[in-house]
Image 1 (cartoon, helix red, strand yellow):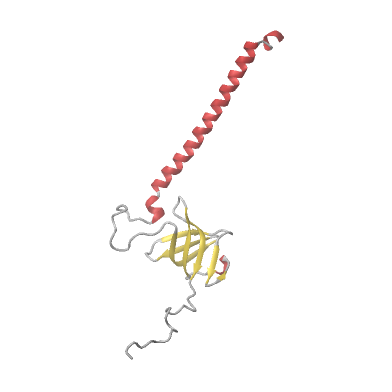
Image 2 (tube, helix red, strand yellow; image 1 turned 90 degrees about the vertical axis):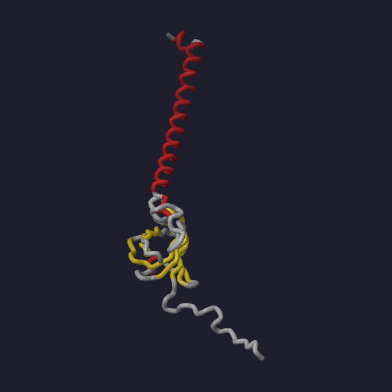
Length: 164
């Protein structure tokens, strides 16, 4: 038996079987990655219109009227604060869920604020990254200062009379 285990044929057979097992494991890993990518692509395609707020009739179905919503942001009013999520009613009356994290920058005017300072009915603009489920992972949230709105850009400029 000892002679059989130390023979070159057995060593070669074990090396071939070991190589075969490694190749099968690598193949299985490739199948796993491929299935994950296909599942993501399939789910993203199914949610495309909802993710980007496109009209139900297709991407060119509503060239006139309200137009399109950007998938990377939304402007509107806070209608609900739920933990780390904001629900925003956009200017086109669609609701978007905005996910806030510790890395999200939230500003009111020139001042950085926290999520605790955001209130229902605040007007805001959100820029972020769309998720597969139609929500937006916020990178920047800019709150409109409704108590002290900026005036027109030329408000305090001297008037020039060209008729002189």
